[in-house]
Image (cartoon, rainbow, N blue to C red; front, side, top):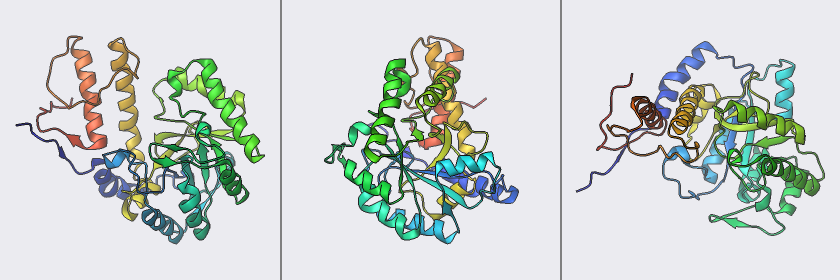
Length: 342
């Protein structure tokens, strides 16, 4: 009879709320120059087939309203990405500021999120995957996307728009010409549709920050196309030393109650960038040792004690990858035999 996997408490939440947030409050952790950029996707009940809370990209309207109300009562005001970069450059006091971003361009931003943002006096930046934005609403994976008329209406009401590429592609898997197309054509399309310049880019999928050569190439490509700033999935608050094209963000979804949201915006979640970076670094090196590209390797299998033919170094690195995966996402199989971490 197979043994079912069981769910551990979310380790990221426990460490954030009960360890790192108290430390952040005690030390201050440069609150005046670290700014939370919150990442939302769909404001709906649609789970998009995701199972674990960490991977949810939806936030129900009632929870989104609660989050916005808390931000307002806590004294936060929203700023745009250009204002943020100017604040970094001029060393302004940016405490109690927050940037709200919405990836993909779901129609529920127009029907639900925008009404609440206006109610609380907030603004936001929406990043569009332009192939999914048409004159009539497109449905992908059970979710409807904005139309160009809705985009223009929102822009007239003060909502900023940026690019999320054309096809929502994993840019590292593309060649130079394809990357230029994804960056340039999406920017050009949005500018033509709203009649204003597009300065910001949101990297689709997980940013391969461990791949320095690719990051430098992409930063040059973004600058050449005409972008001024950008955001990524790197975890943490944005800070002056971040690359202006790959600012860190904090993902928010239906599992973020007031306690966790407060911990995130006050610096209690910044610690998770280090396990995230190590996971990417180890995954990248395992792929290289196995003679595969990072995209070909699928390390997210149950943790087991086993011998790998490719040698001890590969086994240890793969083990560390899986332990980091466990630490971040809190999933463990009873059939797994954990090894001591050393």
